[in-house]
View (cartoon, one colour):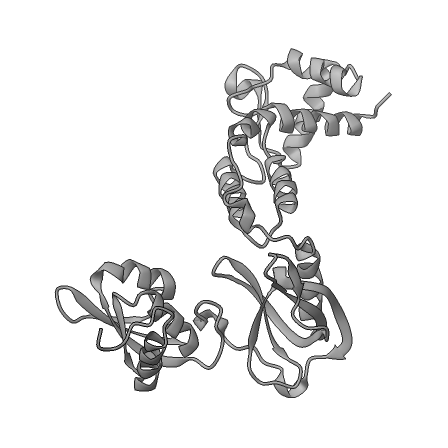
Length: 322
């Protein structure tokens, strides 16, 4: 015979799995499910007592006195809209494998009732071919987080795709770095670090790491610092500089989406604006080339000249006079 404590736990499971605001469980149905699922037959008084205990413990349960029908779990760890948002995000994250995405989404949806979960059966992985084949991602994150907390160096193999679309080691010798943090940007999850003995901050994709191992050695003391990576553009790190650009109004939303609202913007005409941003030049170069038709770097001049040179050194053999 199950104890009162066990009955309370079983009751909580029934309410979590089978009840919500659109599926209120009458007392008789609760007793039937307890019998069917757990082979117990608690009387009404025992169930009343268990519900009172759950209410005392902080569970938000609507009772017969509230709704005149029965009982249901009113609030959960996540709202349905939050589960939908997180589910969509997991589907979209390319650094999580298909299998890991499915497992994680299943855990999220288990926070809902069985009736609420049915609403999510139509969701599919978008562009699943972009999903990472590296199943060490979650392990990598755990190991890196521990190393960051303990200020220890880590070693890892770094992978890149070959012509057969298979991830292979970039080099045989492992990378050894001082890890400072992790950041999500440009649809990928990166480790913020610098190579042992080097000053420059680097970003490495965590889904391209393999065999991450915490080293016994601590961070290089003379390089123990964090560089602000929020200025990074397209994951190009480096020393940020003040860069001014002139753009067509048509890409104003794109500029704010990429660089945020903490930038200086001024209107220069009815069709154009200028903005100044503090960011690594390599990333701005890549961004400016993407918006070549609508954006022009004004300063620094050397960056403008570099972009001009890149345009002339093109694969389409278009000359400056064409």
